[in-house]
Image (cartoon, rainbow, N blue to C red; front, side):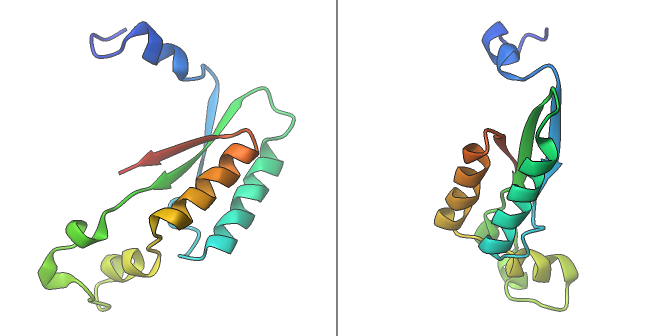
Length: 108
């Protein structure tokens, strides 16, 4: 165990963890994201693993340089902008993940 990892923190990570990637695959559509979560949950049933669904967080107002805000000719800026969710929308996705008994996780 590393110095930065306390016994408590280490015990919170399941030994057998499978992570489903949601990221921006919701395409900026919460209802589509909820359907994906439901499908992942159905796939997870019956297995002896802990399952997580991973979202991605980007604070787009500071992540995208001001000179590039609103650009649609740069594919990543266009994609990030088109798939932007507000906090309430993200909370809906997280709530659905937890309703299924899955772990909600997020990467920056």
